[in-house]
Amino acid sequence: MSVVEYAALAVVILFLLVAAARLFSAPLKLALRVVVNSVLGFAAMWLLNLTTAVTGLSLGLNLFNALIIGVLGVPGFVLLLLVQWVLG
Image (cartoon, rainbow, N blue to C red; front, top):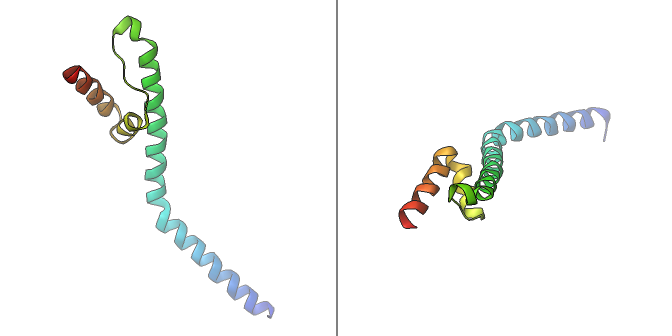
C-alpha cells in the first residue's frame, strides 16, 4: 500500500470512530448516570440501615432497590420507604 492509501484509510477510520462516538454518546451518558445513581442509592440505603436503631426504618440492600433509586433518584427512595411502610 502506498502512503496515499494509508492516509485515506486513516481518514476513513477516524471518521468512523468520530461517528460511532457521536452515535453512542447519549446512550452511554444515560447508562453511566444510572450506574452512578444506583451506587449513590446503594450508599443511601446503607446509611439508612446504619440508623435503623434510631429511626426504625430499613430497606433491603439489593440490586433491585438500588436500581429503583438509580432510575428514579430521591423520589424512588421515598417510594421504596412508602411501599415498605404500607406493606410492613
